[in-house]
Length: 150
Length: 111
Picture 1: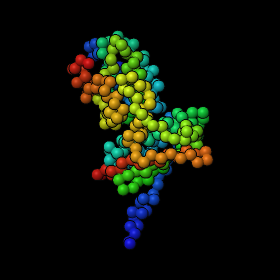
Picture 2: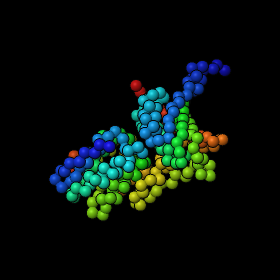
Picture 3: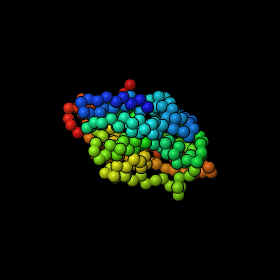
Picture 4: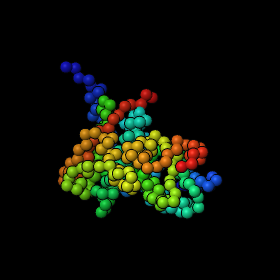
């Protein structure tokens, strides 16, 4: 079977963005990622979805994993066929019970001031998985990734 | 966090002159809003048209401001850009705010 070399190479390309765990660094890191490949190649709608999900994931790491200190966060992105594969790693505290939060939506009528983050991540992201290995948290998920017509 | 307040009749209009309300700016947004809403008025419209991005912290701050105005006044919103609208819709928080397509409509229609 002939091998589609160009496509194989494309699937393997990975972009990395490094941040430290404060909300300013995360804002700047997210901004850098949005302006660079592969996110700048996406349709307006998919880029907006990526911004929402990545912001929630990164903010959770700052607020929870690194609640007791600071440390590095590494965002790795790979663009496949119609899909953006995301991997986010940090050296903070493990997820409670080493499992992902359910992300149940709070009742809007209660006027909640938080608890939306995991609901947004779970609604917009697919194939979420979490792994703790050694002192590293690794979260993986995929997002829709249509390329923009430009 | 740049917020610009102006009275339009008995309505206090606050325009968020920022690109985003996120975790890095949410607390400051809430503090500035707390000061601005001391102005006596019948209605408060928060014009979000310059805001291209709002995360769950920003959303929480907008909800907190709504609670500061209760029970006498409600927080009305105008000019939600697509990403901001998406966050309100997916969290169903669009159901608890009066949302005007643009500030002009908000000023025409009493809350």
